Amino acid sequence: MSKEILLVVESVSNEKGVEKDVIFEAIELALATAAKKRYDDEEADIRVSIDRRTGEYETFRRWLVVDNDAVPALGTELTMQEAEDIDKSLQPGDTHEEKVESVAFGRIGAQAAKQIIFQKVREAERTKIVDSYRDRVGELVSGTVKKVTRDNVIVDLGANAEALLPREHLIPRETFRMGDRVRSLLQEIRTDHRGPQLILSRTDPQMLIELFRIEVPEIAEELIEIRGAARDPGSRAKIAVKTNDRRIDPVGACVGMRGSRVQAVSNELGGERVDIVLWDDNPAQLVINAMAPAEVASIVMDEDRHTMEVAVAEDNLAQAIGRNGQNVRLATDLTGWTLNVMTEEEAGERQEQEYNSLLEHFTGNLDVDEEFAGVLIEEGFTSIEEVAYIPMEEMLAIDGFDEETVTELRRRAKDALLNQALASEEALEGAEPAEDLLAMDGMDRGLAFKLAGMGIRTMEDLAEQSVDDLLDIEGMEEERAGQLIMAARAPWFEDQA
Image (cartoon, rainbow, N blue to C red; front, side, top):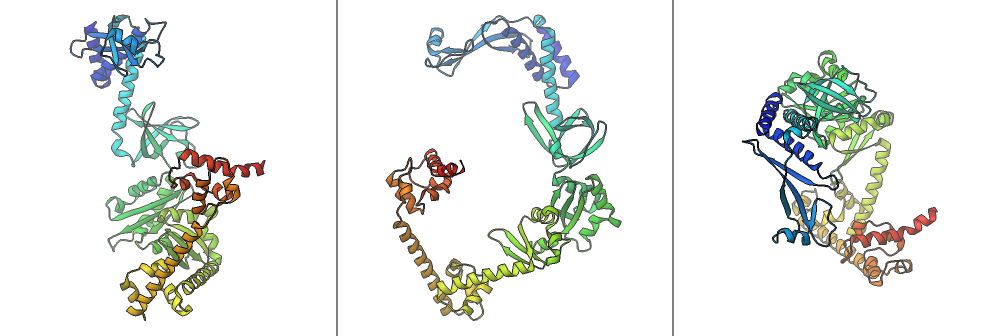
């Protein structure tokens, strides 16, 4: 039988091009499965070991040693008391093995052995094929539709390679039939209980980039660089391009003669309309370009929040926002900035409100007149903190500001901040919890005063907190924080009932 095993391993390995170890492991599993059938009344953990050189094999039965307190699984586990009768050195977690009679290779059931062997071979073949595609993730691949199911389109890529095109990665209203040719992006290699699987996508923005790389030679030659892409699959897309060669018009090169290049890309994507945008390192100018075809009147940028307020003419507002917000959504995805689109009138009103609010803030806290406060606002100051701690050199660069003025202004700003901090601390120290908080289920007096010191004085205040907000309290555990918040929210549900 040992020679027969070696012959099977040799022939299957040569026929399928699979490592011999994979075949040996499959045969070991088949022999172990057959040996288990001897133990009809209980489970058995069986291991078979084949000598890779001679083909001889041995069969072992294994037991896991568990504590005496545990209930051992019948046939696969031993308590410590049972294990001590076998080997005094065994400890919980150890494995005890005993050699048992082996099943003859010729009598294990040829069909069962074949099934296991060929299952392992298929898994090994699939792994080998998938590995050959690992370097191609993010590239376009072409294939033929082999099967269409409710959730997936199965694509034959050739050379025994199959890929999955999930329905959610199909362009809306797109249908395929068996035998259709399809081009997709190899998005990822996903591993699940069935093994590694090639996953395709026709909605990924990277597919748009790869199609332009094929259609526009200047991109393939790296004369033009694609800096970003955003898609509403099947409807509209935006792509940002730039070049370091002044002789080349990157937008014109991507459009092509009479729109031939961009049209070829659009046709592949089910008629998806593609806007080609000129990239700019200045974020505001990039947003202006990305909002096309709408014309931008003005932009207010908030770098801390990474947002921009984009103002457009009243008659241009619908075009700027786009159908169902499509234009502004794509521009947001392309630029990476959150864009708030409004009319010029709305932008003017908002700016006036912000200006008046800052004017009142500076005049009240710094004891300066409106003209002086207006200068600070025009120079970009938005808080007392900035006035107090911005480098002296920057403030001295303001027209009309000398060292004496700046020093006095910074002193007033720091005094204002100190007074605010003291007032806030006094307010919290003097805060007492409301009666409903003190009487709440699960609350104790000490905790109630700690919460009041944090500004949480009532049950309603507590109900609006998150678990993370309460974990800053010394000794507070996540479970208790959750219970307290739910107790505080109980009246909400009673009102609904």
